[in-house]
Image (cartoon, rainbow, N blue to C red; front, side):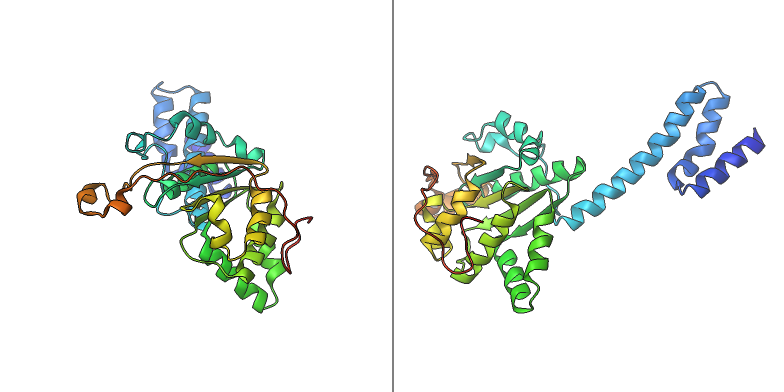
Length: 278
């Protein structure tokens, strides 16, 4: 057995399987004592190595996707937001919307769990082997604007279009200039029917003209973002402020809904740099 175990050990070193090498002696001991069959011993070694590598892959992918700190659906308090259909959210976690290249919109007041749900779906996608990238809209516009100034816009658009799932967070929290809106449209156009997206916003679609500084550009954006879309509205109070609700003014504590209007009709062409026919 010694010569065979030495050969196995050398093979594991050559194959760069450190975890399997680490548990080899214990596995061989179990095999000698009859606690494992030969097939079970092989299966145990391979599972140990695979689990270690998969854990490492997920850790790196989550950091690359900017999905830290990690949020999961298991840690989401559905009882605090009764307006949410838990079964609908769990259905999204099956990730068919990524296969169908759809856009998922989470709409609701601040603190209602939009970013948590978006991140949790991103984490589920990473674990399923999908490429994911998450970024706040303001940061995305800044990055695209910088790339445009440096003559690298095409390359930057290609980078953001590459992921199977792009999560654009915090739409509506900061105003966007018309130039920034045009850049965002170019990205949306590049991903249209080619890659899935998740978007979170504290503003209803009817307010996007104000958010993006141009109702024509906003209409062009919504024309594509609502074509293949799932809209999830969250009507509820802020989870983060739940312990201090009695100290908040009435207008902050209100649970005003953000009702999405029907998909917009085409109303002319967007301004320069935007082509709704692309």
